[in-house]
Length: 260
Image (cartoon, rainbow, N blue to C red; front, side, top):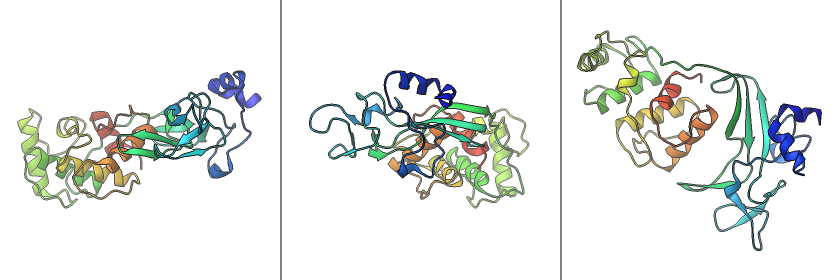
């Protein structure tokens, strides 16, 4: 019970009569679920609350599977989880509500586990990176993709050479910035393009490269389909961003400037 003092949500759940387990379920043995498992209200939409399969999770909208915590009146499900250490934008620890069933998304019913931040220890301020001549890598690829998307024809090779620098200077001049050729905190916000499900083009390719940098297995197709949408939403959840699947300025900044 002493451990429950860390989590007000766990105390409320316990008071409501829900079981707080002493550790992770066996299928989540590789997770640090201290101080214990308890119900979460995040993914109640995956619960079947009436009929033959009451208390089961909807796996794909057609079939159901009973989980250890079951579905508490379609409201509570899952457990509380804390990772002590740097995670995403949280430098000290991250606390999450977790779920071991399925939920319905724009791309269908998907498995979901440990995906919602409820507390962040030492939230770091993610800054736009400084990207300039002589550098190579994902951020350079992204600059080149975005320049092309903005109408400044640039070779996409991941190498920030004289050609890329020239195009950056042209873009900066057109936007009223000092043409330094350095993509910095003033240039990035004007260069990025908001993209979402159904979009296609160079900016989407830039997003996909950034997601790959952060460990998501994606092909660089330039099309924002269900796989990219799922990865974006997962990235947003893990980094304390608003989860909408839309890559706007905040998500772009965290993708390009966040720790890998």
